[in-house]
Image (cartoon, rainbow, N blue to C red):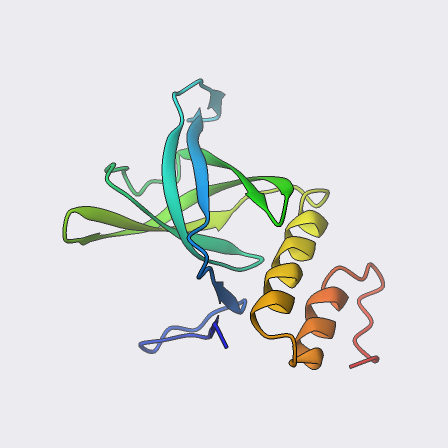
Length: 148
């Protein structure tokens, strides 16, 4: 199973799903100091994802700062998905950089992300029905987890 919980003493708010299929996305800078900007897209490799953020690899070096936002355009299971967030950490690995993103998406975008993550989970571990139900219930507007 390809589910990542907190490692190296980290406490995760969300379960991260490892993206083993080599999912690519287009990354753009979209905002600096609250002002919208246009930038050229860069292709990045997504490593893992959760409802709260993602990890990606690229040869580009971005600052770790809260005054700008990035946007990811991708296709997951034949469904287009657009996610926005802020870079919260960076590590150099050989000749590439690894980054952590915290999502800043709206409440309307969240159900699409949860659906996409649940589809990945179903593909990666079809026998884990309880986990699938938990991801589906994250999208339940009543917040009822009694059906677990």
